[in-house]
Length: 415
Image (cartoon, rainbow, N blue to C red; front, side, top):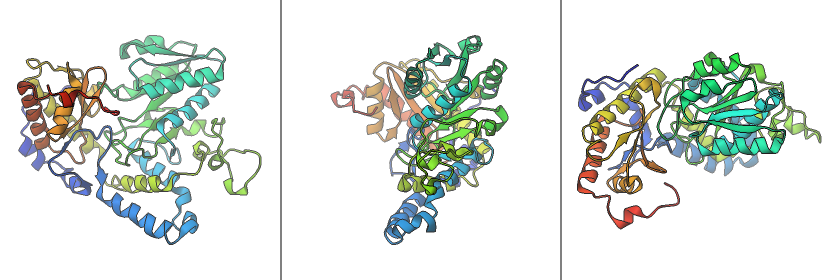
């Protein structure tokens, strides 16, 4: 699918937007155009009330009884089932727990145990660093000659899938440039060689339809704080294909993964279902916020989300394309929507300072080293008019060199 070259009319696009009513469900600061929902989603209004109720009534009044009366104990499963609908997962295959890094450790360790005769983990050099770091750590911990092998470009991946590869570990949408892999094709190619596949859905879940079951993916992980709007540091999630459940042990054998945690057995006996991938006690306040945020998605049409995402990205690329080359911006996100996620990224000199100048003008995106300015398109609460305004402000900052101020060049701890 190739982007249209027909000029988009922002006013008409907003009037005909089937998702426009969802914007009112979010708390969005006045005077801010938020193009960073791919890093931290906006606050759903109902989350504020739900968390306040949990603090005041469930914790404040019911105290420890709320593990039963408010069913805190099953929050990981309830949240997981809500996420499952968005990622095309079968029933009882997804739980919300821990962080993406910890969940990757669990599923990668399990996958390597299932493919014990093989020694290689294949990924991309431009994969998100935490995925690569965890893979390096797991390989070193096993200590049996396992190693991480990295592809320089996506087109190199098929030729790297040989008989010594145990696991193909990829992020579905690249965090820097927004490139999207063909999940079904790569999973099929890997399976044809006896390779298990792990997909990181951090930049996918909530931004577009996903079909893990249809692709026959083995494992998947993802975070709750980006397009799912679960809040800063929200619980992550993981998926395990039914054919793998109960066939091995994941290494973090905490008590919530026990077949009967409140029997308090001295010896570990793992659950044979997705609950095995739980570990310690869930963080209730964070999990409640995530649960409420996921309730917002119950009636969302993911095909409409994807259609609007494509439109927003196309529109931004068109608007910025009128001045990008002249003013030093190089588009690094694929123009073809079939090859991208829900973000638009440009490489440029002085990218950090440019982004700080944008933020000072109320346009919030982010910067990724060494030279990427990144703009996330979040269909539930972003309008075409805002995208047009953001492009105009970006042009003004570049033309006037408003970014060339000392205060915009001082790096914060988070970029």
